[in-house]
Amino acid sequence: MRSLQLKFSLLVVGLLVVACVGLAWMATEHERRALEDGVEKQARALATHVARVADEPLLALVGADSGGATAELTLGKLIRQVGAEKGLVEGRILGPDGRVWASLQPEEVGEHRRRLAAGIEPEQTHVDRKASLLRVTAPVTYGDVEVGEAQIGFDLDQLVTPVVRESQRQLSLLAVAVVVLGVVCGVVFVALLVGPLRRLRAGVERMAEGDFTARVPPTSQDEVGELTRAFNEMGESLQQKERIQSAFGRYVSPYVLDQLLETDGDQLSGSEREVTILFADIRRFTRLSEGMKARDVVALLNEVFQLATDRILAHDGTIDKFIGDSVMAYFGAPVPRADHAQRAVAAAIDIERAMADRRPDPARDGQTPVSIGIGIHTGVVVVGTIGSDQRTNFTAIGDAVNVAHRLEKLARPGEILVSEAVQRRVRDAFKLRFEGERQLSGRLEPVHVYSVDFSPAAHGMESAESAAAGP
Image (cartoon, rainbow, N blue to C red):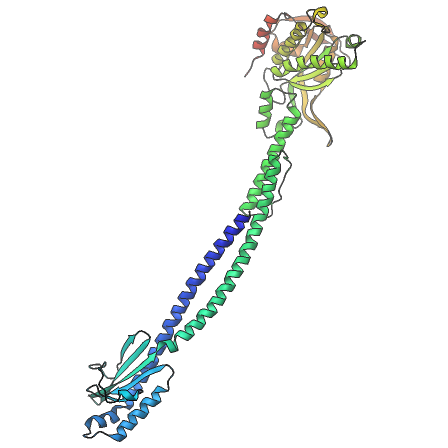
């Protein structure tokens, strides 16, 4: 950011210097031309005045055989009066033959000079400039007869240059003040600009370190403010995805997690939808864990839950919770699935087969034999984030959950029981057997119960998986 301040300050200084120099040059040149025009007007007026006053004395000198002392004195006095003008360095009166009759430089009297106003109309002037000398010549006429000319010369360096230099000095001081003011304003502006950018950089660094709660308050309505708001929106999006990933990364399949991350979070709010609930419980676990060390009991539960979790996630199910020695899962949420019932039954079959595969010979491999009973029901529940500000869970709430739980309680070891709602959706994909009507706790009407007829052999897994396969 310091380089931005330096670059911007140098840019401001450069622009101001160029602008000030350019404006100062234009101003001084304009003033110089105006002063020179004023001096020229003054010289024209003075030359015309001398020509008018010198006509009779000059005529007397030109027509006299022995010269006219009085006329010559008159012309000398006239030239001396004119010489009192500031900046006037030349003043002479010439006869028709170019003879100098009067001059500010006495040594010029009697010399011959080249006439500059020959042929010029009366009352007209001739202007000639060499370096800093501005010479104006006016013809001296008497009636219609030209009897000579008056030459007046001003030194522009004496009249114009000091004024221009003083203006340049004042403009230089003003330019320095403008540059200093511009630099101060530029530094302040860059500081105001760099401040939000520094806060944005700090926010990006925090976000790069994994802190998606980083926010930067907008301080303006310009492009920097829009950039700040875009950064905050990005942080909210990343934080939302982090919450989804944190909440569901271990409970849903990678496909479902990717679908959730691509949504805007609406699927996480509580809403009614039809899902299939699955409960799986380890049978006779209390007796099974008698005599086992607590560490071995935990290891056994982790192993069984790992097998069940892998099969549920493989069919895009969602792990709701682990309750003691049982697991609850549902299919069709948070990402809707039209074949959620088939996926639930296929996952249940895979779980039972996995349990059968791990208990071939306990005496040989030291594994504790485990049997699981599973209950499945399809119904409408409320699925979404439920809880408080301190703790929340994404879960399913409704009567369908209770029905699935009651079916799981009725299931024998290694048995999968499903409700009639499930049977209607999967009867074309799986072989089911009607087990009769059962009165479930908490329900007035009996429920038609079906068991899933499946082969525990490993080679039968492909049919169940293919039956549950969906888009």
